[in-house]
Image (cartoon, rainbow, N blue to C red):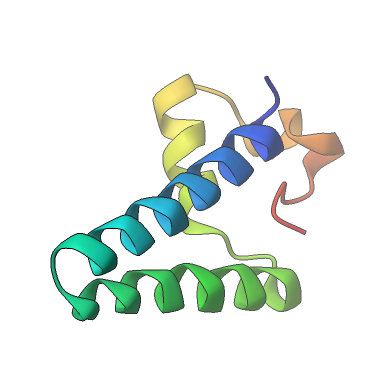
Length: 74
């Protein structure tokens, strides 16, 4: 799976997890959903994507290997 696909899976998982926790535990978990949404919007405009940096460190890939050197979040 590509880095972009893994980041999309991570974002979707975080949204669904926070919605489930908000439903069964506390409505404050919706702040996690808001954080994920804001991060997706800012990464579209700035190209800065913290999950991408963590994924590159975890997988040991370099920025140039990701879609020709660009950010996978754009």
